[in-house]
Structure formats: structure tokens, C-alpha cells
Image 1 (cartoon, rainbow over the protein chains, first blue to last red):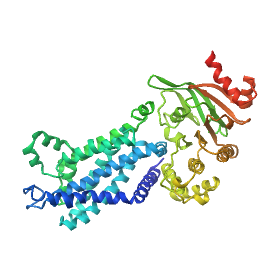
Image 2 (image 1 turned 135 degrees about the vertical axis):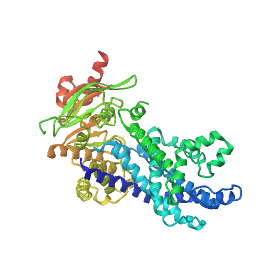
Image 3 (image 1 turned 30 degrees about the horizontal axis):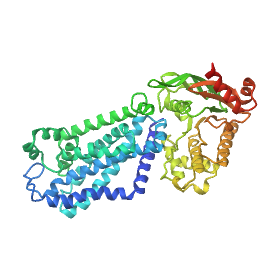
Image 4 (image 1 turned 90 degrees about the vertical axis):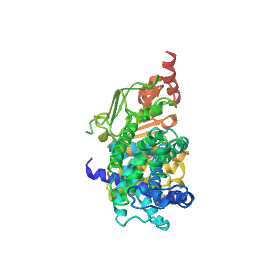
Length: 267
Length: 247
């Protein structure tokens, strides 16, 4: 097996993800509607309740919808990461996972290819959101649309890797509802997506530390700064580290010698 | 390489915690062999297949594919192997053609090459008219045919088929059996055909009887009838299964 075989395999996995995505057009719209509901209803309602002071990267007072836009972009990436997880669990239940697992290419590569394919779809949806967000006067500088790309890719990879890790641990499709309660909601609310962390620090120091430790916070901040052409180095480092850890654990989880697959079979 | 056994299993054992499912299993298949792995449900057939395809890692015994230890050269072993699992493994929302192309890509086959091979295999299983249909629209028998076509796409030299005819009507079962036997006879492919259906063992078949994780007998069907002094394969199987239990 040489590099060209790996490339063909990657192309095949990506094509399948695309076809699946095109088959489920509702998935694209629901991925966009979810943050737009937050933008249209929540942000409007809370516009006068939450005061936002001048904090970097902003240079002036900003409307609340502008503040929560990076958090909503990260929300799209988070839901897509969980969809990678859901599709892996679904594939396992439907049996098609076995065909992936008996490919002669190494499993770390197969999982990484799946992750990259999912990440591309996440980034496209994030850009679609940014276009629609223009209606709410969320207009970053023109170069922000370019500089945000690496932040979207890195954040998308981190959420996707987390999704892969979860899929190696989730036994059945029915158990997936708990992901909503124990992963998506805590990650989203214990972050800087909806409110600046200095607000949180004033209310609860413990929650502030939880938010700081939450990799989702760093995805939001990396995107927020990148939209204005700035790099948030700590967030970038945290995301690279979190992606590496989640992906390594996922590969471990899918390794038949070490992971959960044998234990699952024994149950 | 052709002188080496297509599949060689020596002293294979496996346990899930305290529950032992395979004990000291040994047998081999030569290229071109059609061998029926006959056993009741729960005999350990699927576990054996999972070990041979690296879905589980074997810790006891050795599995060799054309002389290569699967633990040491997994990638090369898997390239030479075509698998039809007991559980359906097709993507229901992709077309027949797309399922085959996806499989081709997982084996690193170029798209145009995979498309050509897919056309040949789809024709061989008689599904040319359905090639652009989504798998969801096909009958159970047609889906199984697609799985056979798919597992041949990368031109394996060894086929592992785990209960491939379960749930199929008589005509579909016969088609599957005839197709695989033809592949063995005409193309020299070795096939291990796991089943609990005794009537899938014809007179010329080579049989491995697996019961409660142990190999009870290996040989030609006629030879097993002679050794057990029974008139039919069903009676021979019952004798082989009961003998050890009584001992």
C-alpha cells in the first residue's frame, strides 16, 4: 500500500460522506436553522439584558448578536462533530462499519479520513452561516473570512475527534440522547459562547475555571479572534492538544487488541 | 505462494471473559477449496470469522493467510481476503454501484478500475438492471448478491462467508452456492462457507464440523458418512455432535 492507495481511500470515504450529506438535505438546513434561531430569538431577547463591554478583539461596543456569532459558529461545528459520532454508531449498528474495519489500510488512517471528511462539511456549513449572518449586520472585516478558515478547520477537527471518541464508547444508538445532555449542553453553556468569561468570573469562580478548561471555549475564542485577523495562541495550542488526545483515544478505542470492541462483543 | 494454504488455523482459541467460545481449533484450506464450516448457532463460527478478519485480536493460536501471520501482516492478509458477514453490511442509502466503488476505494483501487470491475461483478450476479438502485430498494436475496459482488471487487484469493444464505429463499440460496462453487472451481479461489444449514453440504464438499467451540471432524462429506456409519449428513452431524457430549 503506497501513498496513492491512501489518497484513493480518503477520496472514497469523503465521497461517501458527501453523498450521505446530499441525501439528507434536512441535515444541512437544520444545522443552519439551529444557530439562526439563537441569533433571531435569543440574541434579540437578550440584547438589552446582557451588557457587553469592550473586550478584545473588538475595538468598540458591539451588538450582542455580533458577540455570540463565533459561539454559534462553534455550535455548528459541535453538532457536526456529534453527527460524525452518530454516523459511526449508526454504521456499527447497520453493519457497514465492518467493511471499513476490514480495509487493509490502518485504522488510524481510516478514522482520520472520516474525521477530515466530516470537518470539510462542517466548515462549509459554518461559511453558509456567516453569509446568512450578514442579515443581522454581523460583518467581520473582509480578510476575516479568510483568516477564520484555519480556526474553523482546527475547531472542526477537535469536535470531530471528540465525536469519534464518543462513538467508540457509545454502545447503542439509543444511548445517543445522553450525548445531548452530558456533552453538547455542558460544553456549550460552560463556555464563552453566550457571555464573556469576565461576567462568569464575577458570578462563580468555579464555573469560570470550568469554562477555561472547556476546549469548546477555546474553539469559540479562536474563531472570534480569527474573524478579526488575530491569533489567540493559547486557544490554538489547547485545540491542537485536545484534537491529538481525542483522536489518539478514539484510535485506541477502535483497536481490537486494546479498545472496547472486544469487550462489547462479550456483553 | 499458491502452494501455501489459503487459510491455515492452528490451535486457535478465544474467550470472552470466563466464557470460552473457541478451543484449540485447527484446520486449513488449499487454494480452490470449497469448505463448509458447519455448526449450530453459538458454535463459534462468527467469532472465528471475527478473529480471521482482525475485528477481534486472537491471543491463542495462529491464523495464516497464504503463509502470512495475520497478527504480523494484517494489511497484506486483508488484501487477499473477501468477506461476507452474517450481518448485512451494505450502505442502504447508496446505490449498488456506489457500494462497490466505496469498497474499491477502501482497498485503494483507482475509481475507473473499480468502476470496470464493479460492472463485471454486478453482471455476474445478475443485477445489471438494479445497479443504479439504492440498496434499500432491493430484496434480501438481491442484497446478498451485492455483498458477494462487492467482496470480489478487489480480487481476493480467499473468501470468508459467514451464513451468507440466512433468510434467503431456495432459489437465492442455490444461486449463492453455485456462484461461490464456480469461483472456487474456475478461478482457484478458496472459500470458507459457514452455515448451520446441513442441506448446504453436498456430497463433494469438504466439511469442518464445529461444535461448542471445538472442531469435531474435518473431511470430505462422504468420508464423514463412512466414519460415522450414517446414511446422511444430518445423521453424521448429529452423531459427531453427540459423541463427544456423551464421552
